[in-house]
Image (cartoon, rainbow, N blue to C red; front, top):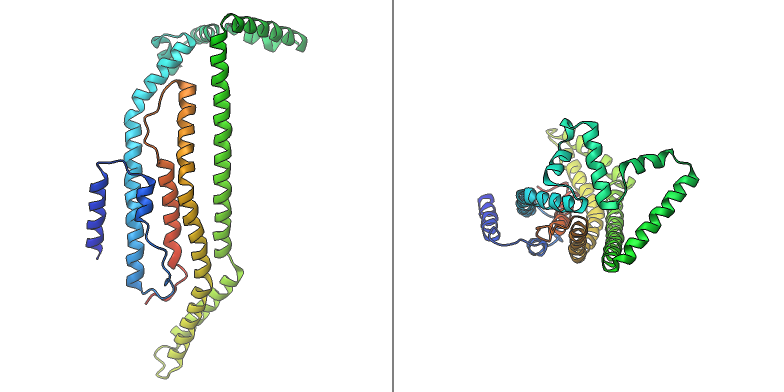
Length: 320
């Protein structure tokens, strides 16, 4: 059976290696939540968990492939960012290399480059910035008013560029606000689920039942080989208590799993939106369009669900 499962996994890997693998593809591989978790025998249990693990393995392969692809493009992306940054601050390629590796630079050389960047990007000098710390509040206010007047004059002289910069700043603000709202929403839902799963695992009644099961298990072991039916009766009592434990907590876990499965499926469009926002932010900030396949966040969400799905049989303590 394990060899057959491995063959299936390898076949799927081979088939998806030539195409982009989406979160929806992994959703299609999800096994149904078992309705007979409390009656599963060990072979059936192992088969189910092995399949869940095989899908998790495929997800791990896809995540690694995507990360390797991003790393392969990292040098090109970094160069594009540096090129755009150098243009923004009016620095040469040589200047940028010096700033990246400033160990061999003197303090004067560093200050000269910083001063050059400030002059080109904001039309202020490093000395002006340093002098601001020495001014009193009235002096700082006077400098700020003069600088503001200068910038206003520049905006009036070049209204198209000013409008473009304002539009860029507004877009970046809106994207950041939307990103925070989405992240906060996802975190709130997942935190609530996490608490519900934790409350189920930490139920005081569950501890009482498990302590009783451990006590019965010891008593049954001590009575084994006595030659009468006392050991068998105690074992029957033990199995009955295990069945009560499973019947009490598995339906609750399954109910939470069903809700989490629905959440996982419904959050995928939101995850795509989150990736799109991140890409737009990067492009606005650096001028570089990232080459990244969408779906990585969603694939992670499917993996999170699968890890929870592995626990669906954990309340079945018999599995013989």
